[in-house]
Length: 427
Image (cartoon, rainbow, N blue to C red):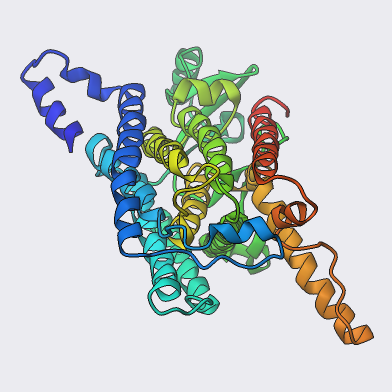
């Protein structure tokens, strides 16, 4: 909203109004405001939850001191959601299709998580919202994201096409020779001595890490359709979007079990996503790093900045000993934001590395349940691989202090983030 106000003020030469056209300025403002909202509004929210005795019923994992958390206010994810939405509404271009999708994602999964927490807290049902309804909600979100990217004329990517493979007239050849030495972003340019032209297209393509000049078109997944594969490539992309959103959202939910764990890890992931969004939306940097240029995606930096500020502000109250838990309202929303954001800037194939902590936590649960069921069917008695799952509870039962576990998981998250950033040059 403020962007449009200052855009108007710049039109009448109001001093300083032009600052709002800089992504860096608006992103910095979004971080600051999100931090302030999370800390100020967060305190009031916690007091309100305490007055109404909206406390979490802690899962018994067999650790005595863990039981002391019972009754800690939950549903704190509302603090995170409000701290994200308000700065975005004020500082982002609200007509940007990517911003619209991120706002829809935040509200959609926030509503699903809120319903789950509401059932647990007010209906006294420990199981909360049935898993199938959560999955349906995540599938619908995947459909919304995939179909929007397929149909919206504003959601395009810029690809390079070698001109040698095209039939050109003499006049076109002269034009190419005249323009090849101009900076990247013009229609024709040179790259490694080869002539290319660029074109903004709507296509289900994504970046492939560790390989130079490698972008994959999801149409290959339906290659058996022959000439119709291109047309149905978006269907494959939508299926990938559904899988990614479901996996990362649930991975974040499973990781949420210790004070500050998800908050800290997700902040690290957010910083990494901010770097990729800025580079992908910058025509010079994307060309230099040889990654896909996505027009208008730079606006996402404002959103992810608000996301980072909201998480760091929430960590003020969520660090050990936590004064508030985010609940599914926060954990499902955080995972969904990360997943959709990665899909929009076409780095979803990097999520297994970037969200490595979520992945390990999820795998530990899958291993625990699968092996227990297998041994119970085979031998009549179930055997557990871990003392408790997800993995952070395993170390808790081994006697490690919770702050030590959390900080070490943060360190692992930083390592994964650095490896993810290195993929920009390791090709």
